[in-house]
Amino acid sequence: TGRISFPTPLLLALSLLISAPSDALPQAPEGQPDPSAEGVVRELYDMVTFPKGTTPDWDQFRALFLPGSIVVLRSSREATSVFTLEEFIQDWLRFIEGSNIEETGFTERIIRTHATEFGDIAHVWVLYEAEIPGWGRPPQQGVDSFQLVRRDGAWKIASILNEIPT
Image (tube, rainbow, N blue to C red):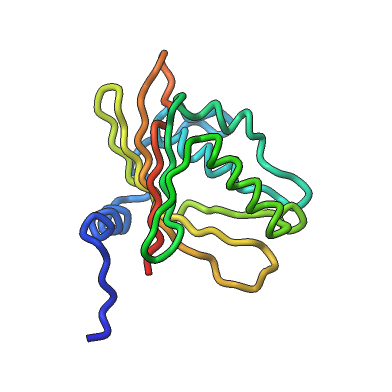
C-alpha cells in the first residue's frame, strides 16, 4: 500500500507532540534556568548544540542525570543500543571525533515537547531535528522519551529512549 508503519507507542508519541501546544508549560523568565522537568530536558539539548571549535561541557552534562541512568538509542532499523551515562558520553566523543564535528559544530533543535509531571516523576516527549552544519544533508528528525525523578528539589534524568521515524 505504500504506507509507512510506525510502532503504536511511536504513533502515540508523535500524535501527542503534534497536537500539544508548544507553550503547554510555563517557561522560566529569560536568562534564568527553568527548574521544571521540561526545563532540564531543554538544557540538555542546549548543551549538545555547539558551534564549531567547541564541544559540550561533559561535567555539566553529567550533572543533569541520576547515577545509574541509561540511554537507549536507535542504532539501525532493527536494533537499539543501551548505554550507561558514561558509555553514552564516550559514544558522543567518538561521533565528534569520527565525523570531525568539532570543525563544523552540531545542532539538535527541539521542534515540540509534551511534558507530564506527577509528584516526583516526570515524562517529557521531544520531537527534534539534528544536523551537522555545512554537510548539505537535511536535518534528521527523531523522538526522545525522557523519564525524570525529582531528587533534593531538582529534576534529574533517569533514562532516555530514542526512536528515529523511518
